[in-house]
Image (cartoon, rainbow, N blue to C red):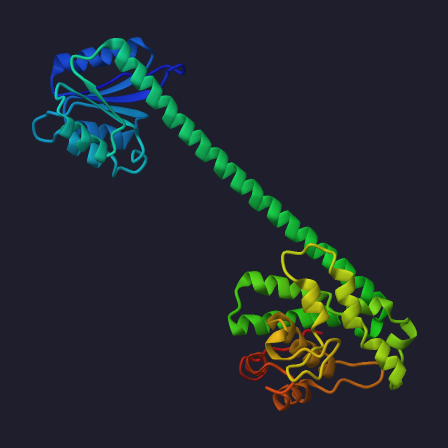
Length: 349
């Protein structure tokens, strides 16, 4: 027998009451309903589980000694029903043996009321465990809401960060129209090389942002040098070489989630120490900077410049291959060569 009575909108909660003795079940049901609870009454364990599958209760009151399926087994199975796994279970039984109580708690029960129960005690425990469970759920909802809010904030911050980085890059390209799009294309190539190498997404994101502004230091170089159609003098080239350090100095005060300033400052360093501005060698150079360096050379050689026409992708790749392990990281060089030669990657116009 399942006795169902729909509660009103003011119901204090849905409770599943289970007892194989009709009189005891009726008493338990009447006490709870009189207090304003909505009650699903079941005279056997099987009927109780069926009721829980139809609608999960907020709390369950289980008799222990029942023929067929006892209260312990009902509790165990109740915890396996989707939506009912965290329902508070209170055993209501004439059994008062400590071992029996311990067994109930091990199965996930939250309390134990001994028959014959006192009305006020039963209602107090029901109220307490309902409120504790609701508070736990509310806390869980608050944590989830806060987590989602933080994720939204993080996405917004990342979008703003990308917008700011892009604006900085645009400032450089306004002064050097011949290399418009260079930083963006280098960032694209570097990203594909990093993916080919299997770098995690978070590292790729930081490297991509650094590549987008890797030439930001050129804002300090006179425009007539940047746009000069002929070959640069030694003095002019020495000024050009300052852009890596200047880029680091511009970005170092910004609190990025990655060492972007260092990536930018090192993108002209070379594996053998022949690069600038610090003459770093091998592992002294960030891997992200080593990737940007290869991407930078490929894009620069393949594309048109004021002082020469584009040399083409084959020439650029040959340069990377010939300097592999000398100036360029061998793993980065290999990934770049695979990307273009084996996988058909092409520079965007």
